[in-house]
Length: 298
Image (tube, rainbow, N blue to C red):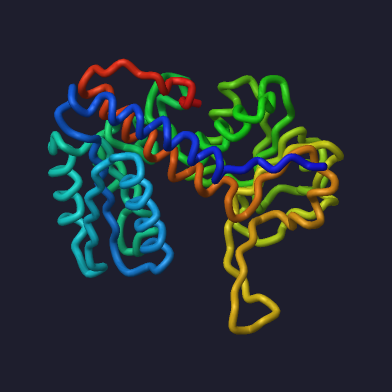
């Protein structure tokens, strides 16, 4: 029987630790950790994700501040807000909720975020430190995946790992983190020839392609570990309802693999949890607090 890598369960266990850490250090710091989220426009999915982050912050004791800007705001106004939050001593972490309307220069806005507060790990300083394998903020989804693997004692060192996808959010930083942990990494993408054959070599296959049900059992070797990063809402057989699925056709793949992540309840909850972890690490550094959370760093 295949092992389910339950991200929801692990995220709740980590949240308990985070809550305890904040409770035991808040008196010394004289304030709780603070997270600022900048949302631009009315993308419905972004609204849901921001609400989920607010709720998670509340559960562990982080004070969240949401800055919801209209999509007719000027780029300079957003830059000014970021600079203001950079100097706000009550804000330990900051993120720009993606995606944002295409008229804005996303990478330029991210570059304005203080690297010490860049809890998404997307600022070029933090990406550069990841390349050099130096301590820095790490991207949340990749860090969550590594914690999921570690929590089930799934070895990374020496394993053949295939990552499908090369985005700045997941594919590229995840590949670098796994390489830093001595995995043997192959990055594939939409232009890869014979994708099926490349995936069949993987001890650990990570699907972050953004295509629903792309990966079936023909892509997977017997006994592999499969991590599904995708999440898609599709129409169900009942036309009035929708269902969630990932990049992996799970019902086809599960009988063949050693372990898998469900969708929902796999990678998604861990992404939010690592955002909390990054915020707390920034808070901890600011006040010189001793940490009991270092095992959560990838």
